[in-house]
Length: 157
Image (cartoon, rainbow, N blue to C red; front, side, top):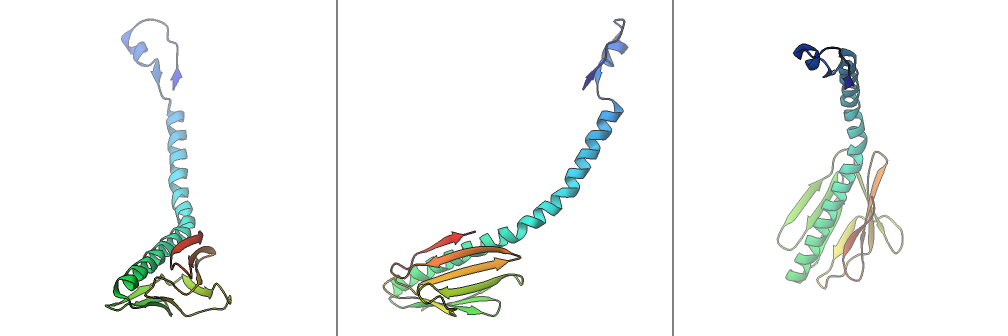
């Protein structure tokens, strides 16, 4: 805001002494227009990363649910890869999870480092030692399933 010095003490000159000029207002509007125009581009860049993190969190939650149900029922639970996601088979129900079309799930044995098609969580809580990788548009998140405890955690995002 620019302060102008006016001569005299009339009410009109005091009212005009403080205010924004037309140029200042136009510059602010131009800057706001540029920020609003750039925001969708920045959000689109972040969306694959957010999708990968959300999908890895969902996979971890599903694996934790499998472990809980396997311990409670004394029966193993199996997570198998499908063409567009994964399927969970537990003693009392089956659940199908479909990943977004641009996303890919890869499961690798933590011991032999070969691709595997399924993860088994046994009735004692142990599991297949598997590294899972979820990727989308160059963004990756890893989920590790511990062999002895069956516990899961994200390894990278």
